[in-house]
Length: 360
Image (cartoon, rainbow, N blue to C red; front, side, top):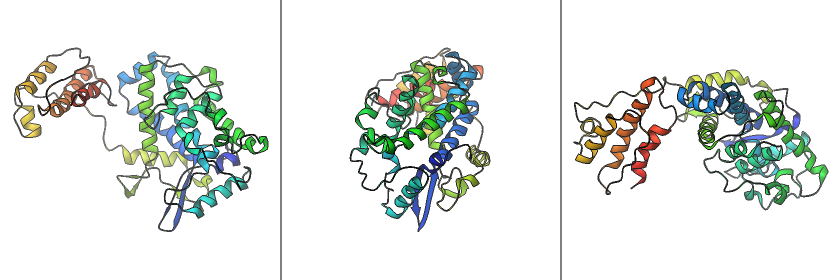
């Protein structure tokens, strides 16, 4: 990790106290964890059809670059004064103070007397979008960073840094105080570009909405996985655990950490759905009751479909639309996968079926 400056190495991404033990995760470690994870998911978890759709927007090589860039920069908004001064969830002021002292020891200015009263106006996902776009990243890609916690911004955050300057740089006007923050944010953006294979932000492609939606889902998945310390809470099955505050980040073997995590997480191969058997009643087999007429009719209709688009089921409450959706998801996934392309994300096959439930 020596390729990062002392400023960058002193930033934290996660922290907590556990039975008197102080734990944290350096920001650059989490960014690299997510970069490794999203690249693996793109190559091994997405379906062939989804990768083809993404690559058609530019090329597979360029999409590989963009995926890496998104993974590394997704939490760049945590490299801001507002985030770095956030208290721990359990209010451990000693841990908070320790990490702030490290920031100062490594080049940031003193936080004495600093009060960021509008911190909540710059949550880190939105801050990340604003930071990237301030460096020239196009809005279609910036919006993915802003949406990586599941809620996209209602508008482009053009005025974020102007209105809430101290949230980003610790001070509204003092350029000496601001300088380390500007420097470290530039360092992270430039590293993200370099590790992805870009020479300049102008090489980052502009996306259409369908591709942006897939990439947003992929980034959400990657961040969720890279933020998981243990498999199902089992401490004998580590994924991406926090480290002790006494431990140096330079001791972390990032590749070994990633390989261990992904081996623990990947329990089996991709789902290959079986054909829903029409000779017997699939509702009786799966749910223990015989299909109602509308359920049986929809199952037969979907089974006869050769090129499905979207299935929208509207029926009175209590008719069994949830069960229809579950079986329809199997059927649409099977039909979509007849050419060997199966659903790796909840895309057309499963989201189409979900419309049945939404209409309740």
